[in-house]
Length: 235
Image (cartoon, rainbow, N blue to C red; front, side):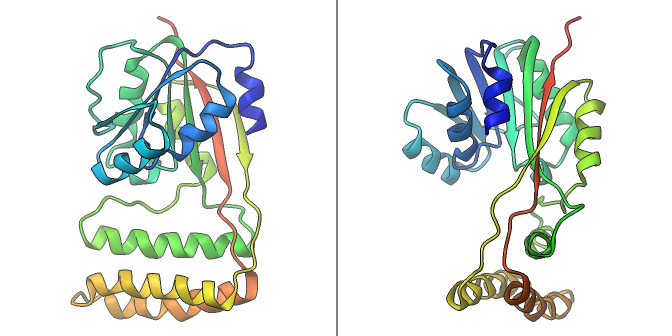
């Protein structure tokens, strides 16, 4: 991300905590923007961290929840959370914890997809995401629907952080092959089977051919993401 590189080109970030790191995808992005930074990644999912460790053997990974970070106050120069805000049981508690473990004057980076002002191909992605999030919630897994762009900025400001810059990031639209469309349909069907005994099953089942048709008509494009860089205020 060019804007990320430009923002941090004259700033020193010696240590950074990546919250909800998953398989470490955002650490790869951050490594391109930051120099000589020691990264730490945390996530509650052990399998994801094992995948992340294969890609980033130089990073320290720990099983941990964002709502309760096991680090002293003012440990890191910066903290980040990417594509994970909609998975959080308590967004504010996580952001406040991130703020606590970042040194005063340090930085918090939020990268999150949003749900408004999307083109038809991006609406396809949103409908697939909301399908999955509905199934997850029915199975007791925390997976919220996508926030609007304004809601994401409001969450950051509500946590007492000072927004320095916010910019949008888009992936290219792709025209899926018939095989890829079938593969996506099969994945939705497989996920739906997890709630086959629930009354919501038949409602969600009707959505699958609608999503398949939209994929054929509009293609697929990731929903736009907003990248927010906020400063931890000094006392």
